[in-house]
Image (cartoon, rainbow, N blue to C red; front, top):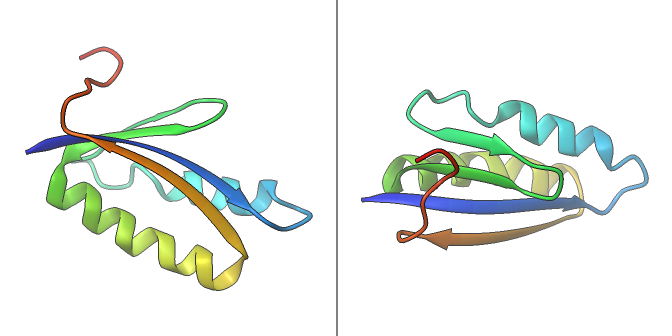
Amino acid sequence: MNISLEISYYPLTEKYSTPIKEFLDGLGSDHRISVHQGPMSTLISGDYDVVMQDLIRRLRPFMEKYPSVFTVKLSNACKMPGE
């Protein structure tokens, strides 16, 4: 099953741009996942299991390193831009 996910990251630190850049740089390294970065959120799409495993693997290090807030919306009914 394909899904679309919208995620926003809010590191609660003075130099918030550094962890945001680190997080965004790591997204899209798996060629099975489509990533579209926007000014307020990032859209990710792909197979449910692939996207969710990638998300699980990526969130923990940032939450351990920085006080963080992530907002996530998940859908199996919304198409990504250009689809």
